[in-house]
Image (cartoon, rainbow, N blue to C red; front, side, top):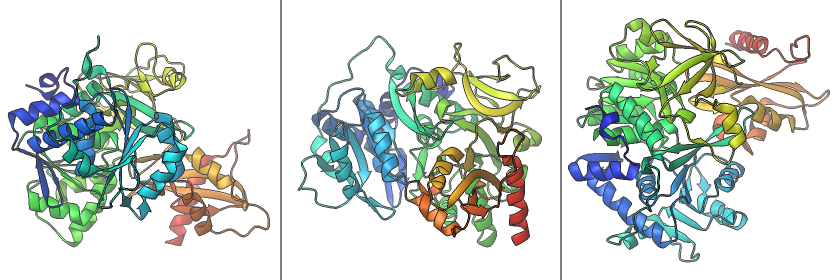
Length: 535
């Protein structure tokens, strides 16, 4: 039976309980030298759920997870699901202003965070945020520090110990299926670069995860790797939940390192790898310099950025037997379409596959009318994975989802006569760098605030490793002396690392259209020519 059928109407909590009951000793999470079975994850999640209930967390309350891909993230997610809370997974690399905005917007009442990470003292950071955010009542930290000095801050392990063996009420019944309740709010940038909280239900995430796992052919015998960002919808969906539903084992990494990943593939005889194209490209370089035994890796799945024909060909030659390409969006709870192992080489190299079972795709004109096959237009999607809506943003939701339930993706593409999707560009101005969406407007607003900058335009430049690099094109103020490194440092003050420009180029003026708008395509060509000349 397909996983989509087997787990229909399940919630995330009941899916874990089911797996822990049927196969409690099966390894679920492997991290460092630690292995947690399904039974152990269930037991720890139960204990944490009891402690969270004891702190006053109620169904519908938001719990922020500011953690890398650690077992504590997994346990916290399932604990929140057990008491009906809504998780808000946040990238630990976000700056303090970005974290503050998302915590305030989501009205998070509790946050689980590392004590320190990437050189950041999160204890100090959150002590300041607790004062500024009245909704944020409690902090749970992962680490070793003694936190006796604040009665609102708790250590993760202490809550596990305190909750062991304690009961908590079952989630109150509702007229709707529990699977249709909100599970998570995942933040993504809007069309102008402003964060939007994508609300996904238990059913949304589990359906996308199960459908992807069915295509990949995940079973209890598989070992999965490549998940280093559980705050991302693909990591949380097909990565974590797909592994759970199939009863497989997931090897977590809190930082991506190509050499370490390949070592783990060889050590654990990994069979399935998820990742961005950047991950696979970096691994190809590592494998060329220090080959590992990759014979067990039967399939790789690349998602999150454009995939080139060359990458598919080389990955299948050097890394895995088959590389599948997935088209994934946060608003669709991850996978929209994916190539299949049975597809021809041409379809696997030049398309993003066919839609998942139960997903409908239309290609639309700007006025919303449907285009015939092999016509280029905006891709619209309807299906079980489409989000519940943007949290607290009904106008944004109505602007992005049609009256008959189709999500307007902003991506330009076409569907061929065989039903395969070809992506040809993006209607919205977004740069996809190593799987992360970066919107030029946000960067441009920051750079324009620099006293030495007259005008700026941020563009994406194709790159073999990152997919696209971020280039800040700048017309300086007359007489000003400003350097590229200064601009990059200026951006780092308020922006996450992955949004900082990789390149800074200076111009006397920008190419303009007849109406005075910047010709961005021509600007990209100029940057590429300049970059090639410097090599």
